[in-house]
Image (cartoon, rainbow, N blue to C red; front, side, top):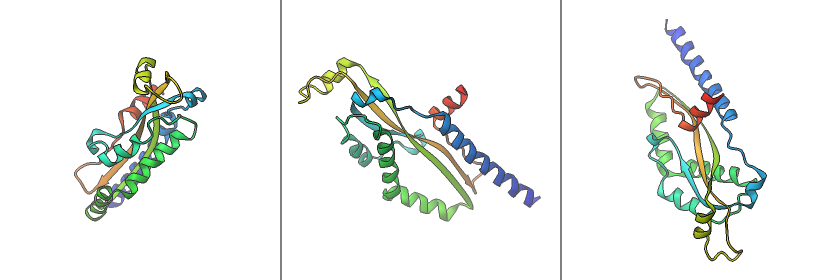
Amino acid sequence: MVGSRRVREVACSISLIVLAWAAEARAQCDWREDYAAYRVRSVSFKAVALFGGAPETLKEQLSRHRGDFYTSDKPNAYATEVVKFFSTDPAALKYEQLVARKLKFSFKGFIYKSCVEKVAPTECEREFKGDPGGPVTQCLDVVVRRNGVAVDKGMAVFHFIFSLCAIAKMAEQ
């Protein structure tokens, strides 16, 4: 009885890993060649509301990208910056230590990706008024999203955490 329960738990965990990777494959935010001419108005980070949003220090760090051209290397660079932030953030590290001490089994797998939202040309002109390169009519907001799954065994239930974006993309397929 105990052995079969353990097998079910492991099978469930493996299924979640596969599901998380499959969701990423279907939920890509594509970079297009014409985006290289767009200027970045803002870069932000979004996670499931349960996580409390982005820390102020991360918001300040990402705000430095205002005015970047959104070239092909930027989506990965912005996502990597967010991952590095959380891997060195004292609050996140303290939480990981707490989880490691308190739970019998814990797994999480997150995938970070950058998505864009085009901004109206009139807003771009207003936001970048006085730009030395002339009027800016093409700009966008970049959102780094965290999609994935967290499984914590040792509590009453398994917790599955997917961003709404991943769920919506999976439903489309």
